[in-house]
Amino acid sequence: MRASAALLDRFLLPFEEALNEKSARSLADARADTAAQARLDELAEKNREGTITQEEKSEYEAMVNAAGMISILQAKARRYLRQQGLA
Image (cartoon, rainbow, N blue to C red; front, side, top):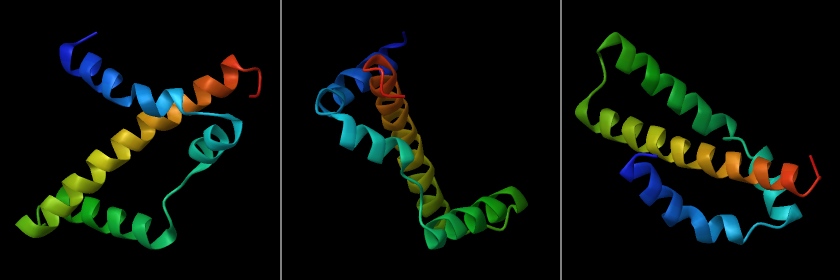
């Protein structure tokens, strides 16, 4: 495991330890609302086209980073459910 991945895993450990069935299911099933997903899609398209402004690029990068963190937490929630025989 890379040092940065190990650090992130240690940072997220308290969240993982706080999981119970209800919170794990909620986290695993969480999705962005329609407006947030539409904005992310819009920024992604502008980024691909090369028409994104610096302010939009900062917003896009923040959203992508948040999505990455949420994905990791969701994976931990799904693993918790499997380990508990709840998935």
